[in-house]
Image (cartoon, rainbow, N blue to C red; front, side, top):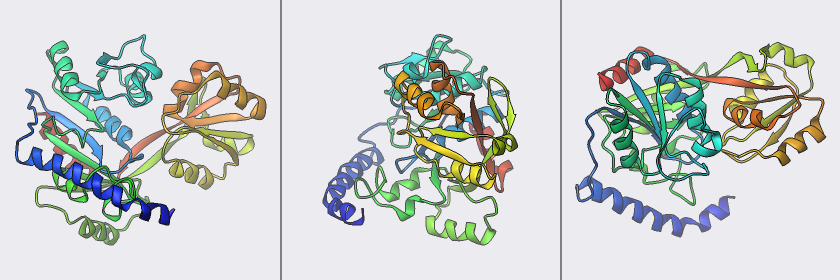
Length: 336
C-alpha cells in the first residue's frame, strides 16, 4: 500500500494544484459565495470516509430543533434520484439517500431535503418554508459557493487531517491549509478517557487559528438495541449474532461489541450500500439462525426487505468530552 501511494504522488500534485487554484479564486472573490437571509451551519471534513457528520447533525437537531425551525440539506449520497427533493412520507433511502432518510424518520419537527446543487437546495427550502430559522448542510466543507454562518470541520482521532496528504496518495480532498476556513474543529471518535495533556498535543498539531474553537467528542452506543422489539446488549451474549454493516468506519462498533463480550460473525458491505433481495437471501441461507445486529442507517434499508431473522440496530450518539456548553453557545448564537 505504501508503494502504491508513493507512485500516486504525481497525481496528488496535480490534484493539489487544481483544488488550490479553485480556493484562490474564492479567496480573491473572483468566484463568489452566495449569502442567504437565514443562518447556514455547515458540517464537513477534509478527508474522505466517515468522520461522524450524521451523528453531529443529529446532535444539533436534538438540542436545537425544539427552539428553532430547522432544516437539513444534503446531497443524498448514492441516491437513485437527481435534483431537488424534499423528504416526505413516500420517500425511501434509495430515493433521498440513507443518511437524510435516517434523520427524516428520527426528527419529525425538521424539514429534510436533498440536492446536489446546494445553492438551489437552500433557495428552495427558504422559499417553501417562510418561517425557517436555519439550515444544517451535511458534507459541505468543499462547497464554497455558499456563505456559511458557522463552518464546522470534523476530523477523527485516529486519522487526523494533519497527518494525511491529498488524494489519491492520501485521503484529503483539498490542501491541508484549508482547515483555516473552519470556525469550529471537532476531533471525533476519541477514547472516552482522553487526557487533557493529549488534547493539548492535538491542539498544537492542528496549529489552531485565533478565530477557531476546538472540541473533542467520542462515540457512545445505547445499551438497548431497537427493532421490532427492544433488547438489552447483555442478551446478545447468550445468542448467535451476525453483524451486518455498510458504513465506512466500522472499528468503533466492533470495539464496542468486543468490550461487551458479544461473539459475532460479520458481513461487511461498502459504505451506503443499497441492500437487495439477493443480500437478504444470502443472510438467511448462511446465517438463518442468527440475530442480526446492524447500524441505524443500515436498519432503515434492511427492514423493508422482509428479512426473516430478528433484526436490531445500535443507536449511536455524540458525547462531548469537555466544553459541551461552549459548543452549544456557539450554535445558539449562530442561529439566534
